[in-house]
Length: 288
Image (cartoon, rainbow, N blue to C red; front, side, top):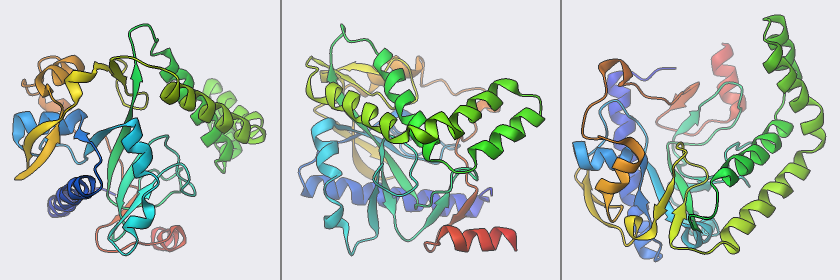
C-alpha cells in the first residue's frame, strides 16, 4: 500500500508528535538520545523531515538503551510501547518506540504488526583497534535466528528455484532446515557477542552495529553531549558535532541528491493511521 499525499502528511504529523513525546519521556527518565541518519540531515538542511523521507531514527548510549528496554511498564496506559526482540514475530536486532494507536505491517513475508515508530539504535563503546567486522558477524547471527523462526521459508525456497534463482533457493533451503533447527543456538551466539561488545570493549569511540552504513564508528565527543536542533518546530537533541557526523556518513550532505534518488526506502504492506489491527484482521481485509 502506498500513502497518498494526505496520508503521508498525517503520518509525518504522527511521527513528529511521537518524537516530541519520546524527547519528553527521555528527559523525565534521565535518558540520553540524539537523532541520527537522515533525521539529522533533516534538522540541518530542512529544519524537519527530508521531503521524500518518512521515518525518524535516534541513537542512545548502550546503558540508556538497555534501561529504556526495561521501562515498558512506564508506558502502560499511554499511546506507546517498546518493540524489541522479545516482541513476538519482531525480526530486527534493535528496538522501536511504537504508537499503539496505529498499525504498520511493512513486509508481506514478515508477519509482524506494530505501529508508527521511531527506530532506536544502541551505541556501544569501542576503539579503532576493534574491527567493525563484528557488525557483520552480529547481524548474521541475528539473521539466521530470525530466518530459522520464520514460517514458509521452504515455500520461498521452492519459489526461488522455480524462477531459476539457485543461489537464493539454496539459501532458503538452509533457512528452512539447518537454521530452523538451530534458531535458539544462533540467538545465544548473538546474545553472547552483543554482551561481549557492550560489556568488555572500552574506548573513546562509539560503534553502531545495526545501522545502515559501514563506517559507523564515531569519536564520542562527536555524538555526546548532544546539542539542540529544530525539527518540525520541535527542539530535539542532535549529535554534538552534527556537521562532522553527517559529513562522515554522507559527504556533502547539504547538496540535494538527483531527483531520481529522492525516494523513500520504507515499505508498507498494510497501514492504518487510526487504530491497531491484528494480523488476522489485516489478512481478512487484504484477502477480501
